[in-house]
Image 1 (cartoon, each protein chain N blue to C red):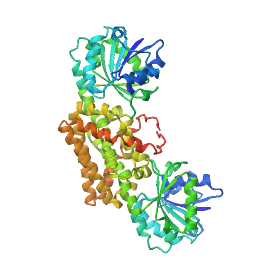
Image 2 (image 1 turned 90 degrees about the horizontal axis):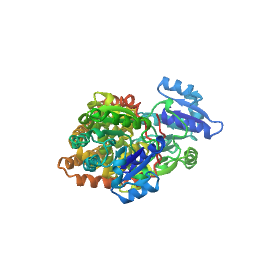
Image 3 (image 1 turned 30 degrees about the horizontal axis):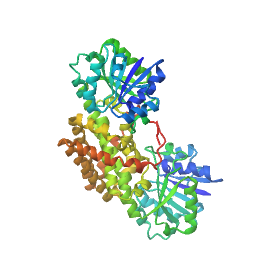
Image 4 (image 1 turned 135 degrees about the vertical axis):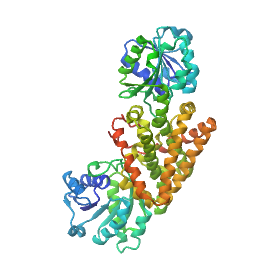
Length: 288
Length: 288
């Protein structure tokens, strides 16, 4: 199988690693706007060759894993280049704008709109590793718009890397992911900012911070290049979550100011329910 | 050595486990207001006997690990009961009120004010385990107010369980810990509340949530019985952090509303610096 990886970072690179492991005789062709990334991906053995224009029509599968703003240009271009028999999958953290931009593309049936719920706070080819997707969920949107034979090829890859599938409408995906992912990233970034701004002596942060602090600001190490376009594309939904979150924090603050610790206690008891909900979520491997 | 553990939960229980491992011939005497906790601690082998009044004067070391509101009553009572040669250490997440309540106690020199920067989101005797403190930091306040010989006994225990020591003024401790721990817990609880309130179909949370979400709401599993008293005792400092945090979130929201994603990007780049700061913090063991 000949596979193109467009954007060889954590996401694309980790697919490359798994593809090599799962498929015999796979040729991995890499495309990236950054020559350094391309070089590094090649040196790390993530790809077998740096892609040329002439390679496109030979590919059986393309994974497009670029920031979601770039995706709006790159995806239609990729669809222009590939053969009729090639499956193109994306990995965008937003789905509606991406689905919309290719809605009327002549090769729409070659595209499977995907969002792998997997990642770490690290970026770039050096972050790519085996098993990133194992036990994780793949969200697929508008599956009926993908040619059946190509759906099968996609499902095969998805199963082989160990993922389960959930189908969602793009609009619903973007609405819910704002609460369950995008807001978490903003809360982490702003928590990190709050602490960095106040704790002028960084030794204090280092000494007093335990794993609790670390887990709430872990996402503040995420790539602004990846996340700014996501917030921008999913702006309305993200703003809704921010409004709710700020309102809840303000309410908590008011209760504390009034000395109403009974309510403070009750709110926390009610939120403890998250324990049950989270029981099924696969935890990230502990990374140093 | 005869050791009293007052409050045999995650914190006290884990000290008990380490004490048994590190000291030969240690007798562990447990005190707890909850008969169920006491029973369970005994069954789990965390303690050798349930403490009686007559045991106090025989103890060489007492660890008091109860919620910080209870601490204000329990700690002076423990100091009343122990012999002149006994060291009492606490584990309170706030320090100023606790230090104040025993400032004029006749046995002040028997007390070493401690805050072990260690924990998980789990509670109770069943959560106790070996190695919770290994590689972690012990904050000690007002060390000069503890008798020198007893300081040494405390340092010995602290080293044996694998901790490093940092000395702080109680007021400074409470101010900084508000930013580097207490705020994280509130952010987690409110994030959890925001998502639970909005995501009526919990299946959506489960399906869409990845490790990023999990790490930002992990602390929302924490014990309200432990954390409400902490927020109440450290109210002024915690309110200050909340004000800052809400202000930063509001600012981020405004920038998004105005479409100023250049500023959004820059803020995130500046916060990426947390990577370097966090490099030294020992991560929690991955728990399922």
